[in-house]
Amino acid sequence: MTDMTTLDLGPQARLVARLVAGVPDARLAAPTPCPAYTVGDLLGHLAGLCVAFRDAARKDLGPTTDTAPESGVPSLPAGWREELPEVLDELAGAWRDPAALTGMTRAGGVDLPGDIALAVAADELVVHGWDLARATGQEYAPDQAALRASHAFLSAAAEEGDRGDGIFGPVVPVPDDAPLLDRAVGLSGRDPGWTPSTSP
Image 1 (tube, rainbow, N blue to C red):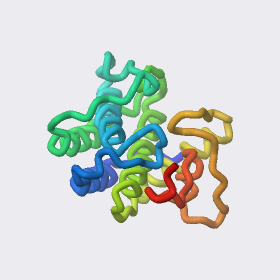
Image 2 (cartoon, one colour):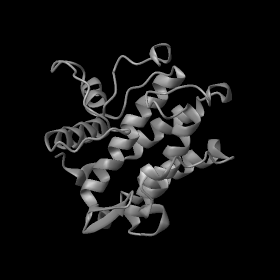
Image 3 (tube, rainbow, N blue to C red):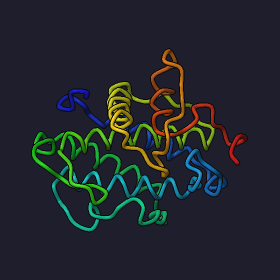
């Protein structure tokens, strides 16, 4: 696993915020690489997970950290264009506190060590950033530190057989010499070649 004590989510969070700003209203109902999510659903999910992992870093455990992802997609806030960048910034700031990495915390209703929670947060931002970029036709080059953390987390999960049929579904085979982002995307259960035109 990557050394999480040096990981700053700020660069990746700012990148995702730029992607959010580039989403036209006309694309909110468009498909994404997550079959059950439209672009609007994905944005709602991002808003919810940012709050959950922000609160997990602060050890502010309660409804925001106890709700499992399978319970449903959070509705897209009316002020999402302003609120999502703010909560992305708050998420990154919360994980800069060294205390966030100590002891146990909770996210998605699962208790886990602080450093693992940070790895999951990095993975969510990297993979869902890719989802959003692909679904809206935007360029995407994730922060390399966050990408390495995401790939390490997904590799470990795949080796443990910790898969599912949801967002992180069965691994999609990707060549070993493929770019690291493609390998991470494949480990997350997505086809790196996905475009809106290939959506079912």
